[in-house]
Image (cartoon, rainbow, N blue to C red; front, top):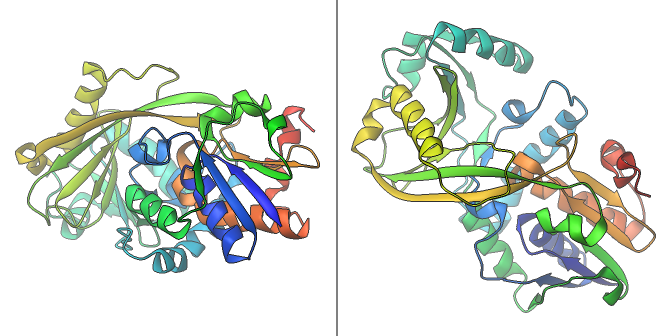
Length: 337
């Protein structure tokens, strides 16, 4: 079967690779296959189904959990993608931060740690940290390495071409163009701006991903083996690409409040990107019509959901069978058949 995938971000590439593994004749169309403009390039790569599940969208949790279970094998197949399963330590600095965090920890069924217990796990934490909770099943990868590995797997099948109209495509088409999916399909996908920093210092300051709040400012700190620490991320309902003093200040202040030792790190990179959001902040996965399938709008969860999205979409294309996992995510929920 010949299949065209429109979009060469982490979702489109994962789908293309899965189809290729199942012997489909697949071509991925990407306007800039060596580019860095996608949400994946600025993503930290946290695989945190508990922390990313929103209370108001409980139907998203089974999908997140299912994809998280696929990641160990998925990462092993791709090779060196910075996979780390050390877990995530969530922390709270102030009494108000703790009151908010307790609600999330209870939702995840995590045991609350005292500040001292949290520092036993992560000695670099500030002595001001009041409490924490440890999520041992959460993981991380480096999305830039993941995309590079997926591109290698699809060598010779990625075509540099900007698709502006789906009517010019023949056969089965999968639209996985991130924020660009709105223009191609009319689906309500919006741009959600995120600013992110990368710091660099001696390796080993942090052992785990740290996800915390400091005086109401939320930040996550994702350590890499080479000494890089990803600090993210703002979430702004804006479409511009400006890196702002306020955004950088909020990220750095929260990061240094939680882990003072980061003050010695070099600012290696600051970047801005856009997450593809939907009205309910859940992805769109399913048939738009009898020829076009959509896999887009993954918002904050594109990296985490890449393996399960690839599997579910490949099943839909090759067998026509729609897994019940995607019943809540079809384009039809927005009035699109």
